[in-house]
Image (cartoon, rainbow, N blue to C red; front, side, top):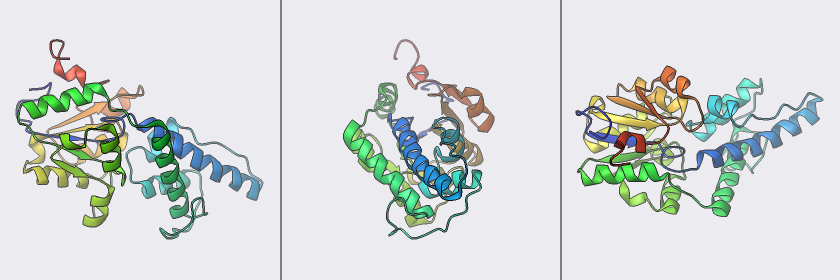
Length: 249
């Protein structure tokens, strides 16, 4: 059914890069934020400025992860150890919290300026689920998930939304841990073996594999099909319309 095994009865979707065309916005915001920090750090230490790579570094360290985890992972990759700071730190403060806040401010500005577009193939797929009476959820690390869904006009399509705010309130570790997806499956009343995860991030497909889900669909928007399969995808497509078949795409 719908391109997946017949025993799949619930459908769990990542947001950025799967449902909405916001992954590139996040990548641009991370680059803007990290480059500002790295340039200042190079000037302070007399070292070389090596910019953030919005493809390789984004995919490896920040894509799909909670914002603070992404900040820590990338800084660690550059051998930078910053204090954690507090949520009240001003943007661009030399703390994990300050850098993360600067990134969030930048992504919100870009979304306001550029708007949010959904992938039509994904919207068509979710509409088919609803027509078939099959439940679905959005599972995102973003605390801005509902704002993005609302801006894209698709918030009402999903029975359950698990976002960064949910994870914080429930004490759930972020992707690549499976906990947010497992929480969404429980909320829909379905065992993981009968649920499918849809992810474009390497950390996300890893979380689907770790959770023992019945299917993990890797959505390859950037030419990383092999990496998605390596990290846990059981099916890889470039767009969800491929799962509907020629007659219904």
